Image (cartoon, rainbow, N blue to C red; front, side):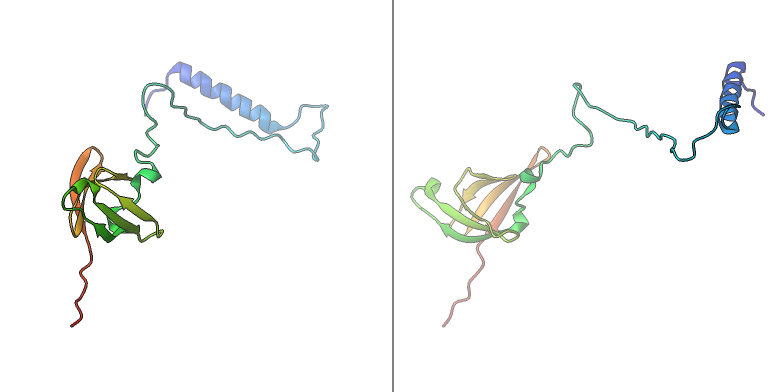
Length: 146
């Protein structure tokens, strides 16, 4: 068996004595009021993050920064200017909320930056957690009628 320090033993005995007095009931001459409930208290541990860094429970991405995803977008129209590519415009539709985006080269939608507009596609740079990758969105192929 483990040896218990004398200081710890004294604290435990004091707590047992206090609990025994409370459990014994009212002192002689005092009657307990059965209509009044004993007050209860709730003790919670509260954390506050001040100074020295960010709150670890907060998301690194805000919900507005996340949307739209490249998979949510559909390229509907490209108005391509062969002489001045910077004047080209692409029209995108978000299939989740039916929102329409008219973009030019350099425009940013959420985490997507329009890098290049070509005659039938738009090239995006996707920025995620400090890394960048290229994604291309193309127009749907239309079937020709004879």
